Image (tube, rainbow, N blue to C red; front, side):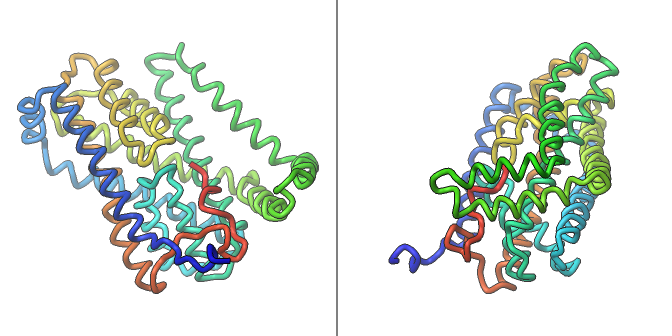
Amino acid sequence: MGDNNKPKKNLVQRFQRWVVAAIGVGALTFLGGSIWAGFDQMKEQIYGFTWWLAVPIILLTLLNYFLRFLKWHYLIGRLGANMPFWEDAWNFTAGLAMVISPGKAGEVLKPYVVRVRTGTPMARTIPALVTERLTDGISLMMLAGISVTTYAGDKVHYLTIPAILIAGGLAVLASKRVSLTVLGWMGKLPLMGRIVHKLEEMYLAMRVCVAPVPLLITVAMSFVAWAAECLGYYLVFQGLGVDAPMDICIFLYAFATIAGGAMPGGLGVSEGALAAGSLALIPALGEAEAVAAMLLVRIATLWLGVGLGAIALFKVSSSLGGLALPNEEDNGEAPTEATPA
């Protein structure tokens, strides 16, 4: 009983620790890249950047955020959560800061705020969060697959396994009888009986999100959103005076984003994939140019989102009188750990 009376951890305070850790990792990545490429050479590349191109690069990033917000708002609307448009826009933007949380668990903030404001159970809206990630993954694999065929068609088969897994998962979701039967068996297992009704509610909500028409709409929105950031990466190279092929830029950015998906903000992994991949695929590219391009695009995408998200997080927290982390005792809602990576 004493455990239930313990104060919940404030999400803003937790975020402050996460952002310090993320900045630390980012600084170490920058230091490592600087040592590898040569600090003076990389500084020269950044000083020589065509800075007016920062405007379209940032606008492309904002287009990515806007389309992904429309996708989120569309999905929770289909699930019956009538969140006001602009209030949900602040909610989504606050969620951008949560990509740096361990396992991205902090992204449960979005369905949590929806529940607080509309009363819609988190078990019904967490599938919208899962669908967000699923459609992002599908669109990024499509971008990587389409672009890689132009210069390395023999490598397309590397995308086969994740594509089969996604298709298999959608096939299982499509069969209501099979899925509910499996959940019924799970309900007979020790400790599973008390949560199986929540899993059933999440499954039924997931079916709404990945029905053919909404799946087609959300994948199309994700495709355009992530293509915009890929174009931004191409413009970064143009600003550095590097004639990087568009198809290679699309592949590199899509692949690096997928590769870093399991890490908070992709920190370390995405940076390494962008720097090493560009050196391997772009002719006559130097280490300093590769690291400078990686640094600039990550500032214009990841860190811009974290900065905007931090502002929105404080606004959302203030409007709700503080944000506590949801947990198992939170009116029977799903625990934070249930959030997808």
